[in-house]
Image (cartoon, rainbow, N blue to C red; front, side, top):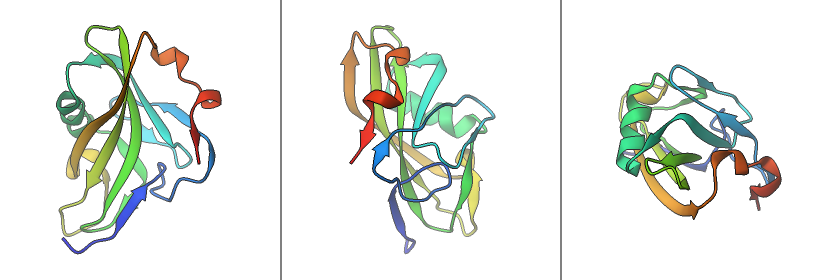
Length: 134
């Protein structure tokens, strides 16, 4: 591919700084704010990380920053499983395989990988006070 690997980023696609998370509930058609470091998908539940990736690809969600041609970046996301008893925190890998800069997730390739499943934890339990970047 040849592009830069940006690592863990915020909505502006800039490196995440140490400190408390900036949480944003993001749903179809939304734009991820520049300072957002942790995304919550709150309008539906998902069976698998692959289903989350498919939703994000079709959702019309935009980043504030532009992902340059052949660059990749990572965002942290949270989603509720279909059973409704667990919240998952996952890595969203965004890969621009096009020859131009993009802001739309649907233009890029998305991969979602679960990092942790929090049994008995709801989305409302996740707050900036309990999610920190070091």
